Length: 116
Image 1 (cartoon, helix red, strand yellow):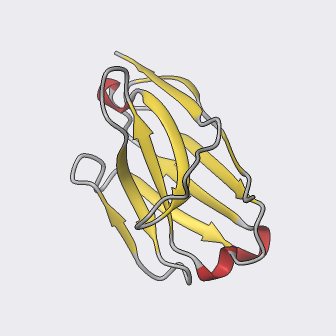
Image 2 (cartoon, one colour):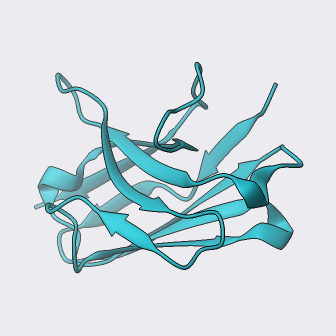
């Protein structure tokens, strides 16, 4: 079973930045598209950023476009999410997973809290 371990979350003031990391324990990491998802309290989980297996193309939800950047390092089986100009509405638990179809399970996620 693939393990997904997210890290890098925390408490930050509006306008600040955070960099999330996700380490995946799979030998096929370099062949799969990955994404960052988030779930805010009382809301459904949503995909905010996705990156192709080779890392050439990133796609973003409109709400984060221009502020978030997804990258990956296939040699380290790791995908990153650089988040700049954070807003209180970015507060959520952030998860990584495959795209377009996530695995049937999720890691523990990493909490991001943005104060106003």
